[in-house]
Image 1 (spheres, rainbow, N blue to C red):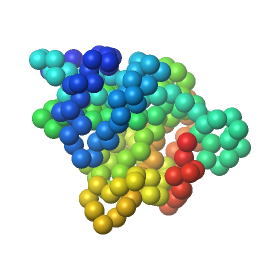
Image 2: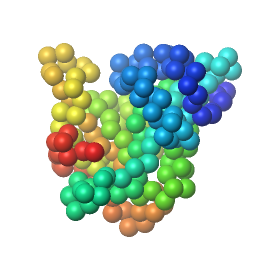
Image 3: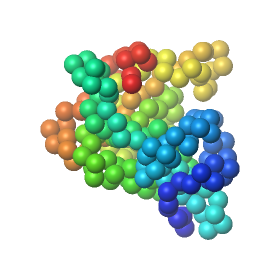
Image 4: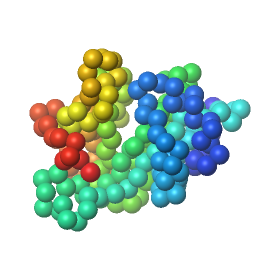
Length: 190
């Protein structure tokens, strides 16, 4: 059984089991601490009975800067999943789903329009997982990742910008069914 709680700075030394997956983005220490400082309630961990971190989610609430309000790429108030990962030995136990649902509940509580995330277009297991939770591809961000997870001869990889509407988006204005047809450059994404 897992225990869910807020991330603490001393957890940084315990994330290794989760970050060993080649499809999990690993960040500089300051990046984790920035999320802890700015959005502490959206940075959650799951730990096993021995206190080992076996999963975590980092999220934030944001919108595009007002100067971009009339841009076709403007993002209204929404929640963003920056990272969600579960250690290999703890997968398929529902931990990733529970972590995601906690962030989605926070999005609803903060009147967000949707929850979004970026995932490598070749990470088929993650895409299937997100789709099973109600996320859909909103757009393809060409060459978003500066490396390629499965082909060392390629210098970049596309990302799917996936979204799930929240209670506020009653008319489903911030999702689309055919998002794979919409391609944008990384400079169009804030």
